[in-house]
Length: 277
Image (cartoon, rainbow, N blue to C red; front, side, top):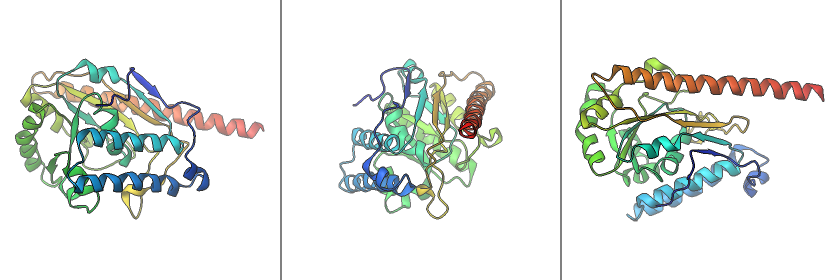
């Protein structure tokens, strides 16, 4: 398995070359979308042939990661050592903003700690993404009845973890442009407690890739917005898990707030510099 990230942090190099199609598209979003769809259709073909292995999933995820960089995306990732600190399978919980994290988590996380996702059932019915997702044996939930989802995860989750794969959960019911703590459920806490594994929080800010109005996964890209991902320290669930749930929410909210403040200050500084010219 390829380990694309060997240190504790990763920052997109300033001299990353732009893709030719990005230059030809005059930095419009369609150039990136063509690169993305090329990788998706290649993955779909392999999945339909029954040869879309976990390692190939990681590789194609890295292809998308690199295409994002080649179209102006700037990654700032911290806390890889927190993934390495817990060598056993874990429950990984993250806030959810866009298509970006679902596309690049396989290479960012799974090259260190093999994963699969807990996903909505309706995604498996999609003509293109369905075969790709099914190939990685995710856990399907309806996102309609929380009790049914909890029962499904508590039944199937232990089997996935026992086979050596960590489980990625987005405890929010849908993608959100902001982090709303009240929408962040404790499904991951309950699973980690039942199995006796650690839980790793992930804070993300991925509005570089916005949700689309007509096709949700093909929204515009915003090159002026950096991409932030931070992995928190692994937590062991004690008691009913309420304290760990609070720590996770505080961690994500704190990281998100810092990133927004930095992004706002950078925008103000850029505007002032342009005004001085």
